[in-house]
Length: 291
Image 1 (cartoon, rainbow, N blue to C red):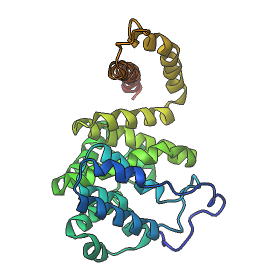
Image 2: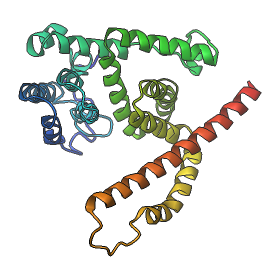
Image 3: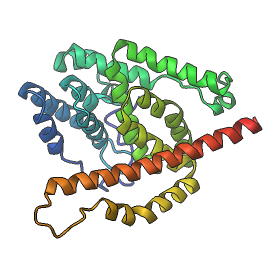
Image 4: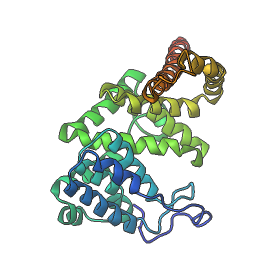
């Protein structure tokens, strides 16, 4: 646990400013009732105060992290309690804020969600390197089953706890380049083996492909850039394919152009995903042969 009054990093503490939460407020106002929006604003204010002297390894204010987590969940149109808990998900573990205080300020539902995320953070997941650290040595299938068992136990109490954790992991993966190399690989491997498959099983494809993509980037950087270069080389051709046949036609609507753009983006994303899946299958086959 980190004392909230201790600055985590001083070298780059002024490198960037806290991002504005206004975008989050605008997004949730489109689908949540006013009382929920007000609760989200209060939660942001409380979290910003709790994390006031903390910065991440990137040098940005720590509050940017829970804000990003909440924004991801708002994109999934999660309920107000989930978004409030997302903003507060680190105040217990990192700042020592008692669950009872969260209960009195934001209600029992939010306090229970934050407590669930805190407990999930403390779970020790098994991995291939675990045997070297004195943990039990399991084969690949048993490792996966044991880790999934732990995640499903967390979901049994409230699936929203796992959704917050998935969004939390996604933002941590987006800033993973600031961690030491060994830590980057361990986190990326854990994400690929546990979090991406879980997002897949829950049907949250947007999180699934992002988690896979970010993990692949750190686990196999050469292969990742090889695939990215191939996709980029075809981007112009793809965008041309999806443009309206008669770009000068005044009857071409903005909506139709937007649909074409979305189709192109989906096609490129599918290409990356399918190429990764193909590479992954070949890699696992070779691994089994050498095991």
